[in-house]
Length: 509
Image (cartoon, rainbow, N blue to C red; front, side):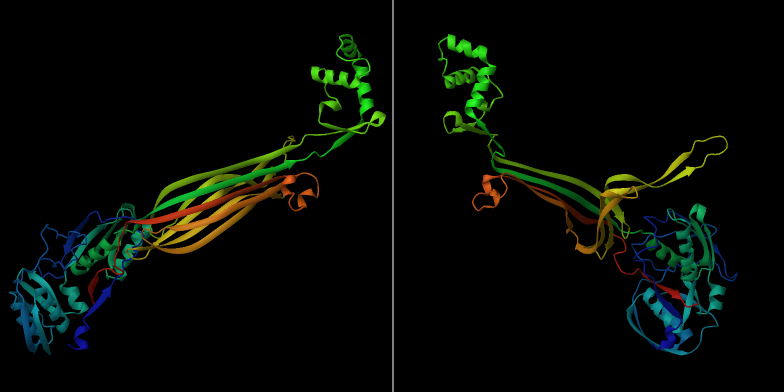
């Protein structure tokens, strides 16, 4: 078959992988009316072959009659012919029990035709390509064959008026549907009704059938993805306190002077001790011991730890404050979990926020006093900032088993300082694109903060001596906050499994 014989038809492949933005919209109903293009013809156009899995819109004529469908013999034939186009058409269609009325526009050029084991649908399609013609059914056993020209199609093809219903589409999406009908399928007569989400089209029946197939795929909607998002926060604090707290001060005093002062201040008790025979009049050490044991003395140098050295009037004592040893460990481990499920359309963005909306006064407006009034009113301008965690995920389905995720993680908090009385914000942001197979998860981990502090209590320089580190008190505190986010995608609805939709054969004219 030469190239000239294939020039009568154009093969159009419509890619329907992404739809036109309709979300789960389906064709609800349609009504149609057959408008005759020529008074010489009666009946309606035949139904073209449809894909089994596509929804079918009904088409009826004005009287409610079923469109004419050819009823050829259900057999398979082989042909090895070399004849003029008119004879070829008659011989092939007659072999399946279909009578043919050939229009004078069909040429008489000799055409070779060699095919084996084909049914009527296959044979008639090949004949149309070979002879550059089209067929118009007259009844179930008769067709009219005419040359495939714009004039003949306008004259012989029956016009079908059909109303398509597009629930769920907005005005812009309905306008996209109308543009497809006009530019792709050549339906020059179409009216859109945005208020009712409907579109009425008047076009040849074959083109209306093809519109049904295309619109059915377009309205299948977009795929849906379920995102399992788990946010873990780990707040750990560890504070060991080990060592000896040495005294940081000491007091020197004259023992005789302190004893005489105590006896003079407690003369009544001293007389009672001497008169009772518990101690002799000059035994001040025994008298002091009895006073301390009885609990009558408090707040003196002899009530605390002390050391005496020397003798006589030069006997000296020294006291110091408390000495203690510490062996303490303080540790805390706080774990919090936020777990949620986000259902989102393919190529749409899902947002998760955890935190607070913080009001920040960016400016203020003061109205001037008017007339006799001296009061003024100040109106602040407030802007709210999202403090805390903001996670945005935009999924893209890549085939049946892979999903890519556009991840955008932002953590924002108060920095603790101000600029012109406006709080400064500390912000950290992470963006990435990751591709996952179904069942895999994307993991984002971040060390939000870590603080180390060391407090030493003791004698300066002593802690630096090797082997004497524990001779002073050391308190080492570590506080860390870690964030882990786990995102697992699941495909819950997959549409348009193929990269392209069904191939539709559209006439050139």
